[in-house]
Amino acid sequence: MEYKGYIGHVEFDDEAGFFHGDVVNTRDVITFQGTTVDELRQALRDSVECYLEFCAEMGKAPEKPFSGKFMVRIPPDLHRKAYESALKAGKSLNAWVTDRLSETTAHAH
Image (cartoon, rainbow, N blue to C red; front, side):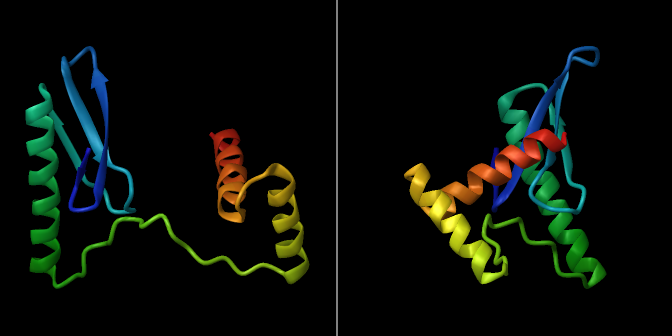
């Protein structure tokens, strides 16, 4: 689920009988819950709006959701090796790096 760029991840709590979620693309904690899809969507909207209002009241800029883009500086020889590995795999450098990061973060959990 998504609202204003904030992405909510939802899980079901079988004991409590409801769904709970949290926004996963910020470091700030934004949570929501509901028993139906409509309730979850509304709860996500309400939680994000509450977060934005709270930030405004505190004079704090709200944390922007992660965009999925970031700049990485690496040594030129590593850049060349990564590019060559991507070519050998038949992928763009971006796709190859994304695959490597996905593999690395999957093993980190």
